[in-house]
Amino acid sequence: MPQPPDFADFVRGRSGTMLRAAWLLTGGDWALAEDLVQTALGEVWRRWDRVADMAAPDAYAHRAMVNTCLRWRGRRWTGEIASAYLPESAATGGFQQVEMREALVRALRELTVKQRAVIMLRYFEDRTEAETADIMGCSVGTVKSQAAKAMGKLRHAPGLKDFLTGETAA
Amino acid sequence: MNSDEQRLSQLLKMSVPHPPHALSADQVTTRQVDRSAKSWAVPAMAAAAVAVVGVTAGVLASNHVSGGRTDPSSPGGAPAASAIKPTVTPSSSASPRATPTCRAEESVPAVTGMTQAAAVQVLAAAGYTVTVTTTASGQVPAGTVTAQSPAAGTRLPPGGAVGLRVAAANRTSGGGAGAPTSAPATPASTASCPAASARPPAQGAKVAVPEVVGMTQATAMQLAQAVGFTVTIVTMPPPASQPVPPGTVYKQTPAGGSVAARGTQITLYLP
Image 1 (spheres, rainbow over the protein chains, first blue to last red):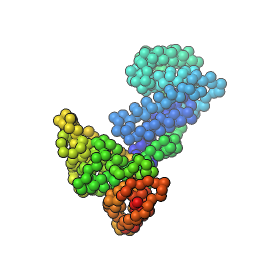
Image 2: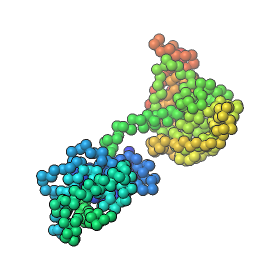
Image 3: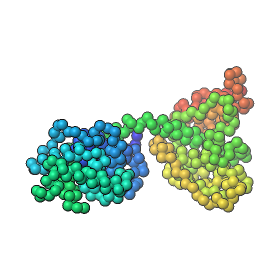
Image 4: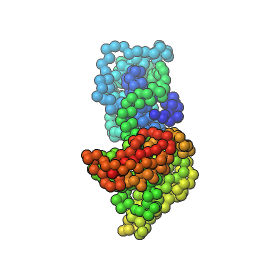
């Protein structure tokens, strides 16, 4: 099967960004994040003839990833995950950052996949509500309500509460 | 964004770690091959086979028509198959088989006189893109290609554009005139043709044997000789189980789709 030459470049250039977004979507699970990105890039590759001609192939890939994730809703992990175990933590960054990351992962797992998608698109990638709605294929109203619900949960999450309510400035 | 949201945004950008290792395209494509190979490989092979039959038969059909005979059984828009085997009978069990090999064509095939569908298929199989212009023409049946540009035999690398002028139905004369519709060649046909720009095989080179069962003797001979075979005709009653119309090839050796050297003798059996 012929492989268009620039697909490899595309994967090299985009996979880092997509993996970080997928990390958020999957609640901080690198294995699932890689699975998700590989699946999304597989969709892109199958349509690469068309996607390569698009003005923004990266946007297409991103959309494929979010939609794949939302489609995976039926899978066990996509819902709220009652984490009985401590999530892995990379030994990078300062001590405070590691604690914060662990708190974030625990909080993300309390969210639904839809809420995580909204959080990722709106606050990690700084997209507008309209863009977020477009990528997720839902209404702006849904984006707003999901963001508000997610925000409400995160605001009360242990370890994040202080940071998010600004009581101890970072 | 309120201050909560700004802080969340800051938190996310600060906390999301960098991936432990990057993905490579190979990881993606090898996974995907396993999943998708079954779904489209078979249709692609079939399409390639049809395309090859289209090329070989198409060239023939144009010779056939320009020789003074038109084929009344192929109306405009009919699939190329009707142009390939004008005399095949419904009871015949012959099915066009062809290996998905490529007929190397560097020059534009002759498609004038063919139906539009057959012409498009022939040109697409040769790797050309096709632009069809419909014009009114009282003389020829609707759907027939009346002119082509560049002319048959012109050197044109695969991927080049070939314009066709197709006779419109009389009632629509004027209405549909000059409206070009583009029918791009299927990518599969060019992608599967590594030898698309090669010269025609020399004497002794291996070529695919055309499937000529179901064709008239003249047609079959013309086709086989065009590919470079010598033809022997054997007149022999067909098996009782296989009713064959007079003048029709009911058996051939070597079989269509097999590979033989150019110059090989091909034997055609007629009732």
